Image (cartoon, rainbow, N blue to C red; front, side, top):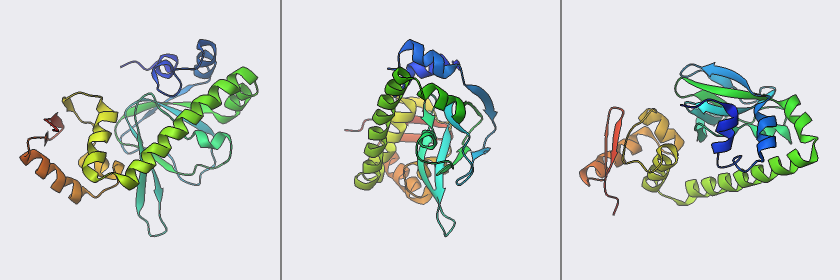
Length: 213
């Protein structure tokens, strides 16, 4: 799997349209950090020092309620930038981030990013791409409100593993349930129903998608 930050940026849906010069500038400030499974990258409320680019593995972003419940907001996959909100309106992380599996991220130090954003061309290019991501996240939030669990499950699998019908999943069922906004028990019941319908088989880490019609 490629872990060159410049090539990763070029392949992302949000920053692939950056000019080659701006991608090179952005990748030039990346610092590599390897993560173990369940390692905390940062916690909600901590002083923010960097934006992150996921190169390998997956990162769960979540918030904690006063009652101690964890609400999963997103599962970040390779090629995605996250925590960029700290560049403009916050000096502390608004969520927590934990590695769901061994992986690699690149840190983009906040101070160096601000230096790049002082350049007008880079700033226009960068902000235009951030606006595209904000629209995407708004659509994701809407789907959590309006779509049922089955729809959210298939969308999640498509987003994480593309259009493949057979693959090995790297996340536990508990993590997938959290990512699609449901409980492990509800997910288990749904998978049992879908298996009986011949629409999905999930044995261990092996997943096979059947006919959805």
